[in-house]
Image (tube, rainbow, N blue to C red; front, side):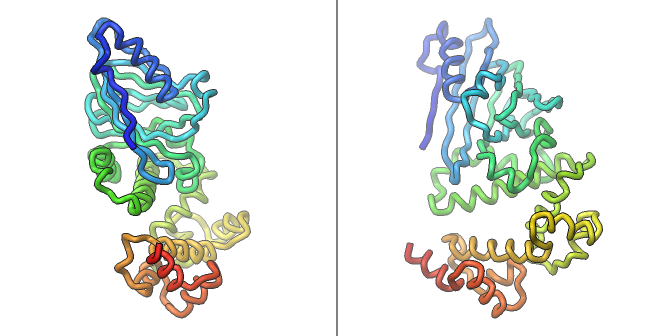
Length: 312
């Protein structure tokens, strides 16, 4: 569903007042358009899946902010703000990101932030339910208002994808959109980590960083020693971190491999893949062991889960 509002049919003398009201009502954000110009603004958004939404906006120069009054109205999602054209600055948590075409940064809607553009600009906005990003990245204060370069690295991969997605979303079947959302969130988490890689990651983010590393290396031969070495911690410290969650590193790996298999077994996009191939690509080496573990974990065999999905 597309939700769109525009000043196109509003008399020029009324556009600023109309836009301020609409922006506040639809975005729960205050804005102050630049005076003395013929103002124009247009914005809309679409649903992707799992509460994930993507929007686009084009407007004349303005300042916008998430004030305490607007925060009190609710909406504590995270926004990825991507500069599609023009430039803008974005500040939160004592940092300021200067965004030019293709660059993006994260904002936390549960706390105040401020953005500004001195000229006409357009942007793409990905709206993310809080829990979907927290489970991948953990505490977010480290990542807000950090500029991600949209021309290289993970930012260069993700930026054009986000900018094209609003126009292409209608052609993506509904049953495939959860996979699109899942892949987008994994890329965003990777880009956010890459964006702060030149700074020291605080100790409280170490468990999240380790889990993210495991998630991106599930198909490989993993051991406590290899995980610890790759993540720059001792094996003893690695075990201690997982013991705080009443588990162990390798049990966590086992759980994530099973979850990856279940996702692929029930996803229409991977219906062509054999069960054994899915298990092997998730890191299982013994298919009989995988089958027993899958039934023990989910109360159904992998074949039964696939058959149920095929009949749905």
